[in-house]
Length: 191
Image (cartoon, rainbow, N blue to C red; front, side, top):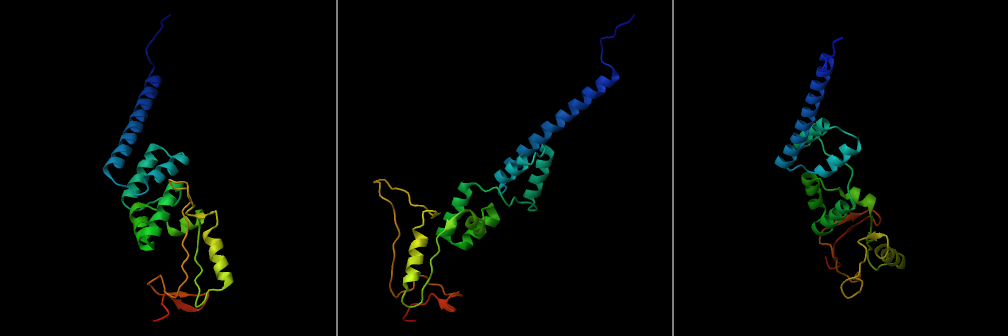
């Protein structure tokens, strides 16, 4: 009786396949790191989170990164609370054009997406003397506890507030159409 302790050709073939698969996985992971380090990919965090949530392999993630670098793919969801707050701040300080530019170049959330996730106060404009309903509507809108930005205590424990100005001067220097009043707003009473 002869006992052979070596590997059979079938076992050797399986071992070679496992080694080749492991080598390919390592190469794919290295490629992911190279793509991330060599390129500034807008929304890469959301892209990776979405891919991992769907159980994508390293090879699939490499393909997604290649498509994102060439501008053919960008994740449209997965924004964190921080991402939405930054988009709200950008729009509030820099305006809608800055937010749109950063949305296209850096993958920021759009103003519509921010509006879906945050209740944003809206000012109801009035033509002429403001009515009681318009004043009450604006007060309720701006002091709603669910509206963004929320009031947070400052260093001395006081809450920051809103300023209400009622006068005959237009604060917005740009004219725009108001469908509610069927009028053009943004002109002061002298012009």
